[in-house]
Each structure stands twice: as structure tokens, then as C-alpha cells.
Amino acid sequence: MNWRTTLVLAAITLGVLAYLRFVEMKQPSTEEAKRQAQNVVAFDRNKINGIVIQNGDEKIEMRRRDNRWRLETPIKDQADNSLIENLFSDLENWQKDGTISAKEVEADKSKLNEYGLNKPKLRLKLIGQDRPPEILFGKDAALEGKMYVRFENSKETFLAGQSVKKDIDKKPEEFRDRKLTDLITAQVSRVILKTPAGEMELQKKGDHWEIVKPLRARADDQKINDLIAQITTARIQQFVADDHGDLHPYGLAEPRGAITLFTQEDKQGQLLQIGSMPEKEKDQTYVRFASRGFVYTVPKKIDEILNTKPDDLRDRHLVRFDTNVLDRITIDAPDKGRIVLARKGEEWTIANRKNAPANSDEIRRFIDTVQNERVTKFVEDVASNLPKYGLDKPQLQLTFSSFASENTAETKAGEEPFATVAFGKVDGDNIYARLADEPFVVAVRRGLLDQVFTDPLQWRELSIFKFKPEQIHRLSVMTDKELSLERNENNQWRWLKGSGDINQTNAQSLLNTLSNLHAVRWLGATTSQHGFEKPQLVLTFTTSPDDRASHKVTIGAGTGDGMWCARVDEREGAFVISNPNLNALKLPLVSQATPSPSPSPSAITSPVTKP
Image 1: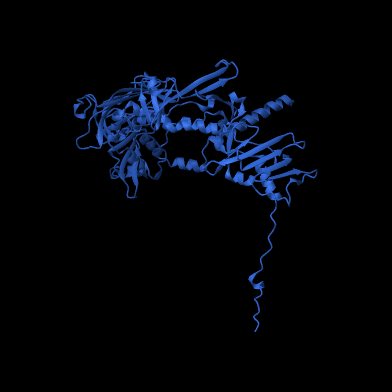
Image 2: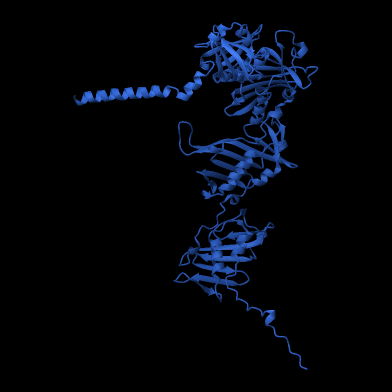
């Protein structure tokens, strides 16, 4: 046998083994096979497209259409899918607790009457491919929770649980879906709302909602979703009548209001009309849902829709933008100039200060503050008189932009503003504001402007020095007197001005704080109030053996909140340091002499009294 024949035979053998393994995997285990053998019925729920329940003289028929179940007889309406899925689950798990053979039944003709299976009142027929025979339900058995059942054209009888009987022994109304609609809130893309106050139209664009009528404005996404959810989650209390008759008794001939929900695919929409209250059920309201063609009652809470006004649905955020594309923030204050903050990766710089490092945490806080700022009042819907609100010449303007350094297929190089907010006159606790691409005048908290720094110095990073303690070569500390030290050739400290033992622990703590000094915040340009003319502490140090790299820190007056004003020679402006940092910088460098211990009372000799 040559090698090719061997390979072919090996491949065939492997294929046969794989097939046998596949078949074996598809076969139920012994335990599963036993369980399946005890099932009352065997069927595939996915192949069932109809259900017929005969309950005495009443026939209930349901059909599956587009993966939804509908009642067809005796009424036409949506069926409750959950009830039907529960019925299928109970049928799949329906077990035989005992079997009475057809032979035994034939031997005693009265058996079927005894079991209630000769002319049973309740019957269930499944319609579809590979469906089981019609199931007949008899009387309850002596065993608790058990009953007799058999199939059409078979006298073999089973003892089984009553779960399936409970699923189908219902009135037609109980199979109706009590949800008004199959829609979920996320599917709705357009809403038309009619109330006594007028008509409103809402449109979803991307991830956000907008008011289209009676004015164009940003909408509050959460409030719109809550409004829609009142319909998509509403539960029917009573099935009253179809909507082909006289609607006057329900206040639906001239409804008090209506809401229509649209999806991207459904251009006709689903219309819900709101009518009057039933005389006896004051906690309910009549509604007509056109897509189902019926009059129902729902909880009176639905009336809240009728009280909705356009301002109730407006987005009260001052401005809304995507921080992922935010690269530039421009602060324009006519009396103080312009500040441009630029993002580089995750950090920020002051672009118009030679890209000096900025306090990125402060900028992120500022962005969050602006994004979360809420309008306190909608002042005017048409900004026709800007001077009245000081918005013709705003005192401050914020511009948020994206920035592209190169041309691409989507964008051109350069700055692309996407939101500009102008601030005008102050009115009590509020200040007037206007978003550039919106015609409205609004009011926001006056305190917001206090959180917008108009001095570029206030945006600088908080790190003052970034050295290692061992880099400091010479140190001078000036208070009411001057102390000066330097490292010797053995890297040990020695006095240049001062005497006594050097407190090495305090010296190291001072160096640790000084070499990595951080500001709590920047104050801006220095003023006489900062107290630098008569400082309480001045530290000068060098970071190279030749003393060319010299640095100086001056500590001035307190800020009133337990902190202290400070400045450094190599940077413009003043900043604030914490009290713990000041205490570390003021640690005594001279070791204190250890006081001699006082004699204990027992060591004191009492004077001797002479006779």
C-alpha cells in the first residue's frame, strides 16, 4: 500500500470518527432521554404559529404574526406574549406522573366519564409543523395538584400536573396584552404632543432631543424620555370597548389631549388620545389607542402629560458639548485680554503664554462646572434687544473649539468653534447669558463668573519646583535673622552663617518640601496686600555646585483661610501655599540643647531643724 492510499484511508477514518462524535453529542444523555420519555407532549415552540383553546362554548384563537402573538377570536387585539411563552415553558416541562393504558380504559367504558375525558370542556390545540395531537383536559385527580389528560383519538390517559390547565383556563380578556404598546422608549425618534396649551413637536437628532414646535430649542433628554415612558410603560386597567362606536361617553369624541409616537420606520405613528374619567373609577382615565382600535382605562397619572409646557421640556444646561473633541477654550474679557487654553493629549497648556503648562485638574473642573451649569430662568425666546441685557458688548465670552493641526478628508486645519457663550449684565443673583447659535436670552448664577479666571496666571500649573532634595547645594533661610548652609565635599551640611549642631531631621523635611513645592492655587499678579514688602520668610537655594542656578521663595501675608501668599523670582505672579508647607519651611535648623532633668521630689533633701 502506497503512502497516498494510507493518507486517504486515514482521512476517511477521521471523518467517520468525527461524524460519530457529532451524532453522539446531539443525542440526549440517558438521564435526559428518560426525562423526555416522561414528557406529556413533544414539540418545537419555534414551529408553532397558532393556539386554539376550546373552553366550553367559548373558543379562543391566537396566531403568531411577525414574532408577535395576536388574539383573533373572539376579539382581535394584541395578545400577552409573556402568557404564551409561559404556556410553552409549562408544556415543555409537563411530566407524566402516571399512565392508564388504552387497554385498561377499553376494559371499563365508564373510565373516560369518570376522568372527565369523554366530552371534556377544556381542549388545547397547537397549530404548526410537527404539532402534537389536540390535548383534552379532564377532572382533577385525588392526588393534590394532579389531573387527567389524554390526546384526541387516543384512549391512553395520563396523570399530570395542573400547570397547563391553569395557563389556558382563562377568559379571552385575560389573554390580552395590558401594555399599551410594544414600543420601548429608545425606539421613539419623534413625538407630537397636543395639550390645552397648544401643540408641541419633539425630534431626536443623534443622541439628543430637540423641541421643533412651538420654538426651536434644545430639549432635556431625561424629561423627554420620562414623557415617552409614561406611554411605553402604561398598563391597561380595563378593556372598555372598540373605538368604532360613540366615543362621547368617554370624552374621546373631542379628546382633552393626545400624544403620537413615531419611530424611524413608522411614519404614521401610534396615537394615544386622552379622554374623561369614569364616574366610578376616579383614579383612572379613558384613553383611545388608535393602533389597537380600542378604548381602555389607564391610571389617572397619564393626565400629567396634559400639563406639559414647552419650558418644562427645555434643556436647562447652559451649554452642551462633547468633551472628547474639545481642544481649545478661549476666554475673552474686554478689559483683561484673551486667554487661550489648549489641550495636548490629556494635559492642558496656556497657548498664548508660549504653551506654558496649565493646571489641567483646574481646567477639567472648570469644564465640568460649565457643562453642569443650569439656566435659572429663560428670559426671552427672541433676543431682539441685546443692549437691554448687556449682551451687545458682553463682559465675558467663552468659546469652546476643536482643533485640527492637519487637513483631513473630514476637516480643515485650524480651530473650529462649536459653542460660544456670552455673559452680559448682572441682575441680582443672576447674570444674563446667550449661546451664540441660539436666539434665546437666559439667566444663570452670578457666581459662575467667579469660577472663570480672567488672569492667565491663575491657570498655571500648581507645581512650583520639581527638584530632588539632594539636588539642593546651598540654602539660605531669612526670618528675623539669616541662616545659611551648604553641602561639603562629603555631601554633609555645614554652616556658612550660623552655629550649633544642625538638626538633620528638620533640614531634610525642609528640603523635601522646598524641592517639590506646590501651590494650592494661583492668585494672579502680585499686589501690596500679599505682604511681600515685609516678608515673614525668604528662602534662597542653588541647585548646582557653582551656584549659577539660584532660586528664591518669598512668603508674605496670610490669606485669611489658614494659608499664605508666596512668590518665586523666576515666575510672575503670586500663589498660595498651605499652612503645613509653611510650617515645614520654618522648621528650626539648629538642634535645641537637651535640658537637664529636674531632680525628682524624692531626691530633694528636707532641711534639718536644729534643736
